[in-house]
Structure formats: structure tokens, C-alpha cells
Length: 421
Image 1 (cartoon, rainbow, N blue to C red):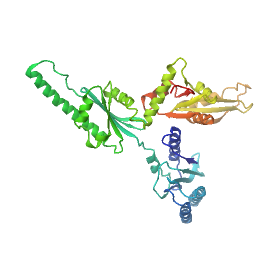
Image 2: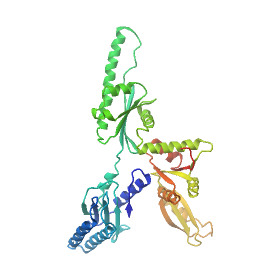
Image 3: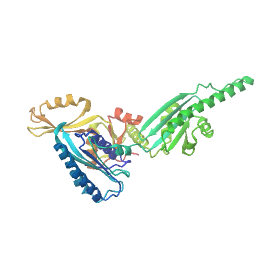
Image 4: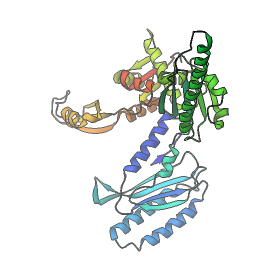
């Protein structure tokens, strides 16, 4: 089994995460699972030589079954390595081991996976354990695109961090500072001085929290400072934020402050955030909604409608909620061969599938239906799209637009060819 990862391709990312989740679920008996990390451009012959030594060492294992499983896993890793002359420019990772089938010890099967990492893994490591060693792979999945957002006026403020597809660290603040004094005289001047002092304390308080949050992310690429009035400019010009952020600040105007201002700031700073996956997803869902509102729009949604358009090659782009918790099942009549396909919620499968199997076949009337295929609905639609060359965009439900795709459009929608994008 092979996996590649392209950070710009949501399907590639989805499959890579799915592989890691699958590998994480594997568990062997004792220390029978092998993890092998090979650094870039390493000659494979050298690695095979090392594994031959480990194979010989494994002959000293006292347990006959453990010895056999470890040696079989090493041999399987060697055979997989023979497909390569040397590790590629990013390296190579092999996972091999005896995995108990159906949870039964003594009924193990050797499973082998190889992974081409998306970025160089400068690590030469051989490890035997009851689980595969996945930490370096998980490290590769960490979001690299991190931005800070601070929205402020003289009444309230909000701070947040955007990491890839999520808004995190969201905090809100109120100033408690009264509005400007309109009466004249000395009392007005005194009031304004006090007000300026209170505002300064408020700015310092917001900045202290913002700096504490933003400094936790040394990889932060930029900080959006936004708001509906001149406060944001004053806040930046007077240097309330940490000096290391000076060249990373991007100022935008918003109509709102607080939580609503965070969402608006992200939308208004789309060009600044163009590398951010979340922004790309939000734009796609907004295009879908715009087309859905038009009289002859190019949007299609609903599982049956989308599948029909997809199979006829009419879709330009397929949008799917990444965390759609549904299964696509195929049922066949063992008597006449008729086949039926259904989508069922994962939470209802234990009730729904037996219920469907108990029905008589619509074609021959016999109660001889059997389950022949079951797969996640997301995987089903990806495979259907790949058959006809339709672009697939997996959308996270972690942001507002993504949540709307899942709840309002059923998590499956598409933009037809020729849409006004």
C-alpha cells in the first residue's frame, strides 16, 4: 500500500490522514510490528543489508511464533524495498508486521505499507514494537499556515488564530470605557484624560492577551488587525503588539468588532490569506450558495442529483463535507443478481442494514438479499469523481461555510460545468 501527500490537494490530504488513522489502529502481539524510516537518497541496498542482519538477530527470539512473525515482517519489508533503487528526495517509510485478523491471536497476517513522505524525513530509524511508530508522520500533518487575527474598537475586541482550516484560540474582551464626553469646561477635559488612560489600559490588556496567544506560534505568517474605526491604526502605530510582529501586520476595515468582526476580517483579507485552505473552502461554498440562489444557477445538491450529474460528466467541481458520517452500501440478490445501493448514517447501520436485507428483492420477490460492499460515502463519491475526471474538494465543517454545506446541502453538492466562478 502506498500513500503520497500533496498539501494543496484535499483528496490527497484526506487519504494521507486516513492511512495514518488506519496504521494507528493496527496492533501486534509483543514487538512484532516494524517501522522503518529511510532518509532522502539513501541507497536501498544498504538498508536491505541492515535488515538482513536484523533477520539473523531475530533467530535468537525464544518464542517460536514471535520469531516467525518478526522474520516474516522483515522479509516482507525487504521485498517491498526491492521495488526501489534508493529512497527518493523526501525519503521512504516502510511499515510491516503481523496483524491479528478479526482480533484473534495466532491468526496473524503480514501487512506491508510504504509511504513517500511529502517533505524530507532526515531520519534513519528501525523500530520493533506492538504499534507502528507514527510520530514523524503525524508531525507532517501539522498545519503550516498560521495567522493571527485581532479585531478592535473602543468598546470591544476579539483575538483568534487561524490554523489551516480552523479558527482557534478565540477570545473576546470589552473595554468598559464610556463614550466621549460632550459637555464643555474643565470637567470635560478631566473626563477625556481619564478616558484616554482607561483606553490605554484596555489596549494594553488586549495586547497582552494577543501577544501571549500569538507568540505560542513561532511559525505565524501574518497578523490581521481590523476594526470599524481608527482604533486599529492607533493600536498598531503605538506599538502595543510584540515588536517581532511589526512586519507581519496587515490592516483591514470591518463593519464589526468582536466575534462577528473576526469572520468579517478573514473575508476582507482573502488576498492576504490566499494560501490558507480555509479561505479557499469558504470561497467555494459561497460560490455554491450564489449559484443555488440564481434562477438557472449551476449548483446541484442532494445525493441522487449530484450522483446523476457526476456520472453524466456534468460536474466541474464536487464539494463534499470531509466528516460526513455516512456509508454507501451495495446489496445483491443471491437469487437473481439484482443490485441495490443505499446511503445510511453510520450511527444507524446496525439497525438499517439488517432492515434492508430482510426485504424481498424488488425484481424476483425472494428474501435473498446480501451485503456485498460497504464504504464511507466520502470515499464512494471520490471514486465516482475520479472515474470521470471531476475535481473534488473536501470541505471541513470547522468553519461557518463548511458547517452550512453539511447542514444545509446535506454535505454533498457540486458546481456544474460552465458555472460563473
